[in-house]
Amino acid sequence: MNLLITPSAHGQEYATALLTATRTKTTVVADVRAALHRLREDEFSAVVIDESLVDASSNQMEVFLKHLGTAVPVFVNLAVSRADRVSRDVVAALHRVEEERNAARKAAESELRSQLKDELTGILLWSEQALGVAGLPPAAEAKLRAVCELACRMRERLECEKG
Image (cartoon, rainbow, N blue to C red; front, top):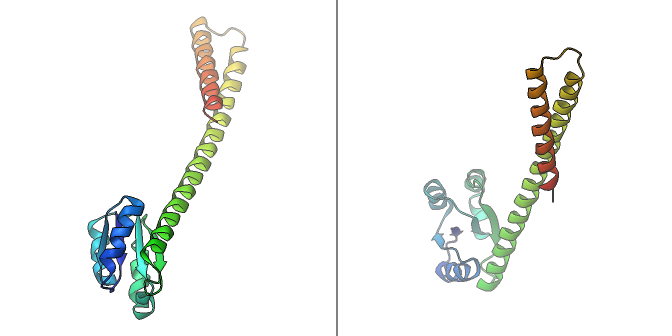
């Protein structure tokens, strides 16, 4: 869901254009106070803020921006921007945020995969060294071989999932 904050009488027209462009319902509120109330009630993908509100209530705006959560703020000048332009700006912002989230997810996955591979290398090394100990009871040797096999399979899976 999107949130549009504007005192403009044409707010519903912009909301309709945003619905068409994003295929997501847009709620229209007239001021920052009402927007804060809506943010407490619902989660939004984008919050479109009419720039005419920014200067008028800068203190409220600072508080408001801290409460956006995962919503992307999009500042627009509705006095000079047509609905199709606003829609394009919102779609572009949503796309950009999605790309950033995907990049962050991939980076986190890569880091985790690297850490796991390092730990598995340690497990394999220590297990193989333990297998070389003279006089190792057969039951312990069998268990260490099972640990080595499991670690090898896990490392192979991590390598395969990399792409």
